[in-house]
Length: 333
Ligand code: SF4
Ligand code: SF4
Image (cartoon, rainbow, N blue to C red; front, side, top):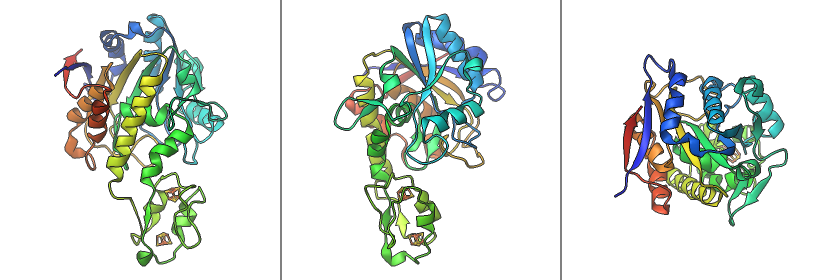
């Protein structure tokens, strides 16, 4: 059985000074292979989110990439839920408010699906966001977190949900559409008020073609009349693996590095606007050329038992598809 290398820097004294070790970490993992225009794919945080990966670290990664011949830009795509990253213009405003300013980072910030959700279709289901497709290489920075629907969010989720257009995000979220139980409904209408997508009819049935599976209605339904579909987490994780595979195997380049930050580890992803609570202490940063190995190592270090449900479905599925190895060796830097 083959084993992948995963490099690790430990967070000592919390996450203090981690940025000073990023250069060594990236050199070990082979940052010199990333030449030309390099997409630095990350989540720059929903408005009011406090735990997204801070520009301080990203600035350091940008400097290292430039030193080794890369020409990086920081990037992400717009969301399917209607908040402050729903359009490219809103995302730029949110990113800049969070400190992701080109003048600070030392590189451009480009919303990869552009002003009009531009993508390149690579199969029947998957469209890769245009600027990511047109790059020469990619470095994926992921904040390791729990997730309400997919149990875990790391590199696989970052690529699957983050490198694609809205249509492909909706394809993945189809499996998270709620189920309505009329016998439990008290007609309070809170679900209709919470839904920003006109996806609940007057008689509280889900309008499937409008629903993006965001779960906002489930969160406000006090009687249990709206519930998650059975097997939601497993089905979503399998779609994440399927789309991550389609993205990484259809990019016109195979030069990618995956860097997972295991700091400020929250039960929800950086789309969340909740006041943060933490699943565990800061651990450090992992880097690998193997997306499966880096996520598996992340789960193992945090502790599988701390996640809601089974967070490893996505790794096992990605491995089954041939995207990487579940076995890995940690190389401490
Ligand atoms: S029906 Fe519920 S899950 Fe679907 S879009 Fe509306 S709030 Fe989100
Ligand atoms: S929130 Fe729940 S109980 Fe209230 S109308 Fe919607 S489905 Fe019915």
